[in-house]
Length: 394
Image (tube, rainbow, N blue to C red; front, side, top):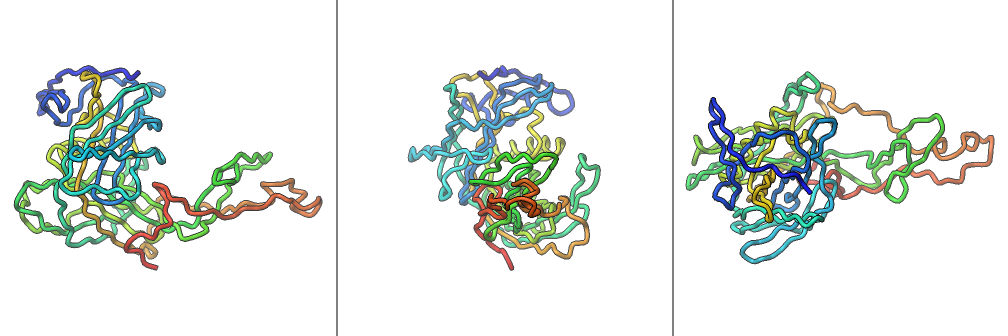
């Protein structure tokens, strides 16, 4: 059973005078960063519901102490559901590669109201406050600009190359608007699977010990296939000073040069509620100071999630339902001079020498009868697809 963080009020000098740590059904949904000792059993939820196919997801994690360091492990045995508050329609999500996703044909409608429910095997139920989906804002244009020093990464102590994506849009004047951007990139793949000290059979890497030999067996894609990557930082914007204006060349995404393969970037623009914007504003500060979205949450961030059975538990994270505008751009990267971030190793295909006795491979013994496999299909996963992305160019 998770250890609970009890609600308190923490006061700060120099700007952070006091956070009222009260969950939404007691009248407050402001994001807060409560101070606490590293503790196991903290639940962290990152959840989105979108009007665009393939953009909705939920992650549910629990904190564990690993040599006095706090990290979050994905919980893959939860029951996760979206519920339309007005129609009572429930949409069940399935676990896929450390993420819960709805059916591939699911997309919410503008103006609808949704909430999230999470049930753990021990009977604990977590819920969100309801979120209404507002109207999307159209993107007028998109462009990509290369920068050999796009971002500085502390872990490498150097600048990394890549493209920054910028857009033009006309901000509606009839209301305050809050924007959040995510992207999915698509790069052509040659290798669909690699097995370290193993071989691929029935779609899985299987143990295949070879005395005195360390190897990696690569398997070529049997059809066109694309690797998918996602944003590693948070881009948000408020129209506080641009309400109703034409906004030009607004930077919204950083696409790093992991490889020199040509790439399609599918940009998603979410229209947030004021509460969601404030949450992501705090989260952006945390992420920017702690190594990107791949790093575990280093501090608690309380949004609109709560334990339906215990008002005293802090639930970290947030459920956000938002209208989405999607636009794609193709980027030719073949002529870039800087080396890519990822080092490409030589191709190693499965061979007789890792399957059989070397003598069978050299003719000194009867030939090896084990079939050699050198290719595999392109799996449909969160990080790989055989579906050609919009805007792809040959």
